[in-house]
Amino acid sequence: MSDEPEIDRKKLICLDVDGVVHGYQSGWKGADQMPDDPVPGAMEAIRTYVGRFRVALYSSRSGQPGGLPAKQHWLHMHLMRSLGAEEGARVFDAVEWPTSKPPAHVTLDDRAIRFRGRWPEPEDIDAFRPWDKGGNRALLVDVPDDALVAELSRRGLRYVRDFDPDGRCVSGEDLLREILAHDDDAGSIVSRLRDGGIDLVRVEEPYPETDEDEEDAHG
Image (cartoon, rainbow, N blue to C red):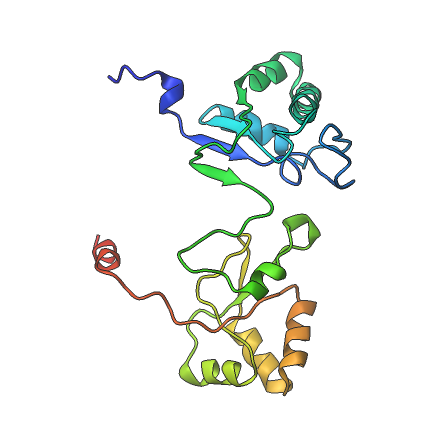
């Protein structure tokens, strides 16, 4: 058995505050102002997480005057309301409050793109929207044939095999073929996709298979 304290063996997860825990419908009112209710399910999720992980709340408020006590007061109040005094206090006492970005196992943030080894295009970054502002979705065409990729490229669109800005990709080769069959210009195609909540269609070569991938495929 390890002599390492149990808390040190737990993985650390870092939660952003505004737009993740705090609803943030009112927007920025100052580091010491948090007027909105929690994001639905936030208090229950924190209770679940502290049972398995070290949980840290860190955001741009953390190092600003009044920011840390405002976060602590807000979380304490809403944990008590949601979980009751005893359970709320237990969960609150388990939360950590770093004032610099911690070396987390995972960070939950509403304004981040998961880095997958490929750098996002400037257009993708510029078009990014957090989940509560509509989010970003990519039309994911699972196995495009050469003719479809060529047609996409001709019309100024791009296909992506593995682009997941916020965990919501749409698999839609049939949808894309239908749109291509009825629209002749890229602008019209993009408009129809966006009307359906799809922001990005990208053409890109699949990841090359590595020796490690082959080993995984064969167990």
